[in-house]
Length: 321
Ligand SMILES: NC(=O)C1=CN([C@@H]2O[C@H](COP(=O)(O)OP(=O)(O)OC[C@H]3O[C@@H](n4cnc5c(N)ncnc54)[C@H](O)[C@@H]3O)[C@@H](O)[C@H]2O)C=CC1
Ligand SMILES: C[N+](C)(C)CC(=O)CC(=O)[O-]
Image (cartoon, rainbow, N blue to C red; front, side):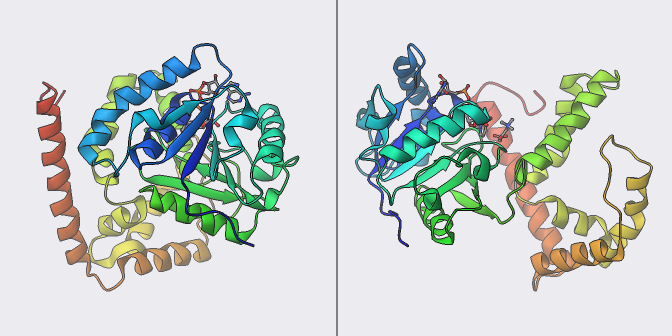
């Protein structure tokens, strides 16, 4: 089973926050882009958003031939997808709407064109239930702003072919993205489960009068947020365990999960879970020592701090703004 991976024409259905981000990214990569959105004034709003994103994309570097003039806005789903080599749906997050839309998209599209949905957490097996050739249908969940952030989660449904996951991954990589294959089809995938947990706690903190939204944002942006740009939670906590690494971290801070500090039920800290976490972080460490990883963390943190300070100054702000 083969799917189109050398794409020249990209179709974007839905041109709101996320759809326009896809259009900006793909235009900047020198593709022809066809867009459709049923809202009155959608074309004008889309072109305005692209123009606003363009300076950042120019700074990042445009592909040869990249031009905002290569965007065509059409007035039907069928015209949007018929000639497209890759199709990205970014319509409102409603199961019934996506179910109907994908029946139409897939009936009109080339049979070997990958169809992707930007959904943040709906299950592809459900909203591709009426699709023609469901083997080429995937989730490609991006992050806002789509034209700058590299992560895209790829999720298959029950009928998705493994070759379609590979093809989507090839295309997104060519578009400068960092695909992450979510191997189990679960609601919310990986990233939004993490983000939702944080978001839920943030809302509890506001609701309980513990902190203002600004204070909670400060708690992120002056702390963990800075290190999250280059190191995830597991390796960060490996370093928090000192030379003994993750096993010491788990024994020292594991019991706090039972207090509990948060409203989220914590998983049972079984020996297997601890072993899995220790094994996973050991693999992430690879041949590096704790000290070498600390040097990497410190150097990168300094570089991020310098970059953030410079960028804020360029926009008339001080670092603490
Ligand atoms: N906003 C975010 O931070 C993120 C959103 N997503 C996902 O992207 C998708 C789109 O979300 P947003 O762009 O935020 O929404 P949005 O509300 O900004 O844009 C949705 C667009 O879809 C259009 N639309 C309405 N009915 C439609 C239909 N039947 N077919 C096609 N388009 C239709 C609307 O006119 C609007 O322009 C959702 O599935 C959402 O879960 C994914 C990542 C991040
Ligand atoms: C709020 N959200 C669930 C739509 C967010 C995302 O899906 C990803 C993002 O950009 O944070």
